Image (cartoon, rainbow, N blue to C red; front, side, top):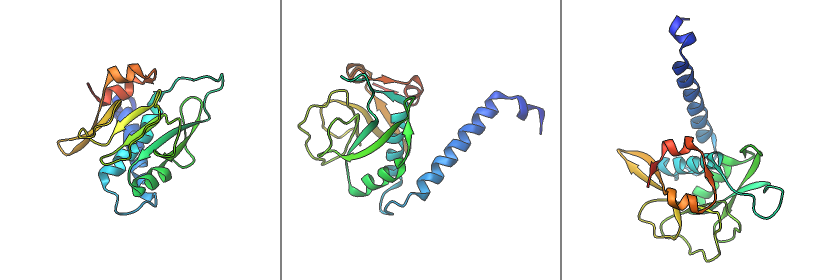
Length: 181
């Protein structure tokens, strides 16, 4: 093995990033979701899953943290099924919390809410819920993260003012990847 390959920390970091990306791609391809789901929507589902790794929600009320992080989805059944299969059996965070995928209209106490165009109106209170919008054209109160396309790539924007008002902690690693509003 060449000298620069064994001792270059940048190479090691790139190597691990490549392996993680490859693993994520393989997981996405092996999930038995509907073929009608676009690559863009599959990426959005992957982002939602990964957001739960980089956001910490406050402990409300109990001394015990919630045993799960609830992702509520206001989207098609194909998207819902894909995300449900993607996170099945996975745990995130320091507390190894289980992930639950719930329909937005029936769920309560969502930590993350994904809203899309033409979605159902949600009338309940959304304390400390990080609301992620499918696109900038969505008119929904309290949106903290918005997906958008730039140069044929899926990106996301984080509204720091809104995030700070939610009493959640967003990792600097996630903020580095986002466009900040």
